[in-house]
Image 1 (cartoon, rainbow, N blue to C red):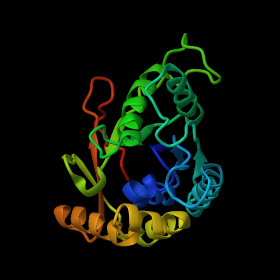
Image 2: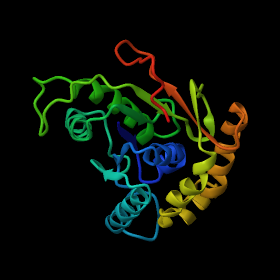
Image 3: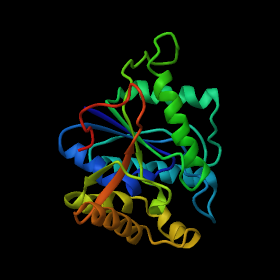
Image 4: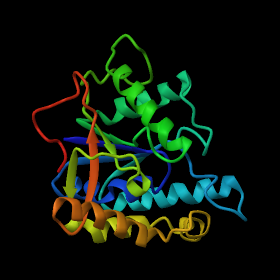
Length: 233
């Protein structure tokens, strides 16, 4: 099975579904980790260009830990918009990965890049199935099930599925720790230590479903995207 996870920035996937992706990889599935924005605004006292280069290296290092392939970006931070050009760029990411399942942001999350990512994925995932809609890659005709990730801090999110990541929490942490450029930034600007944040979020979701650590998801309950099989690991 091909698994395509699409986040807004480098480190979003690690925070919100890193344990699940590690679990997929351990089970032998092919995992693609895409970030649509290059992360060039997530810092200070550094040029955006240099920060983007650093964050690209960090994203690839994190993906390598689980044998995943890193894809993207298609825009700078806060330059992601629901335009035709960006939808086409995302369509080609989808057509390249040929996913059996897509994981992405909820459209109710806390900042524009996250919510627009969710919207773009919804639009592009259907368009990618159409053979007459020509882009760089041929159509991937499977109408792929979509699972939305938890929101940051869980606000406004009602899970339909949980994944037990207790066995994979340490690798989730190691994946997040690959994003060294974000330690001080998140602790300062967001007033949240990254490791403590994932411990609290994963611990809370685990408490809800009776395990030590879990990640939460909501299936897109839409015609053509619902399967009888739970595609989460």
